[in-house]
Image 1: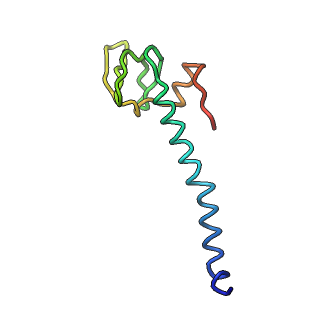
Image 2: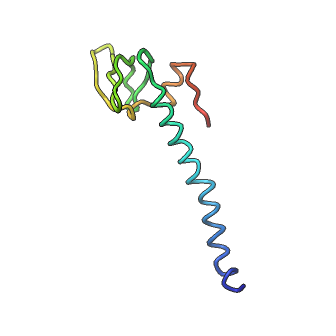
Image 3: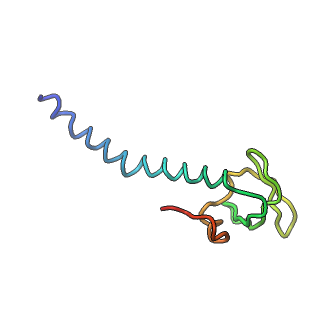
Length: 95
């Protein structure tokens, strides 16, 4: 019983860290993956670096983004979920 009392503060600290730090990050990562898989041709998007454009082609891990300057090929993970949700009202960002 004394050993349990010794480790109880460490166990409680781990539980608090898990529910306030780790779990929200996992939830956000899941939402971003769903967003990336839900992209379709013709969607207006903003990249994490601030480039605005429209998706013209989709591949498994890459997209071709049509901008005013031409076409750019980039990774799907480069698309900003929050900024793109402002352009496409059909895309929801859950907090």
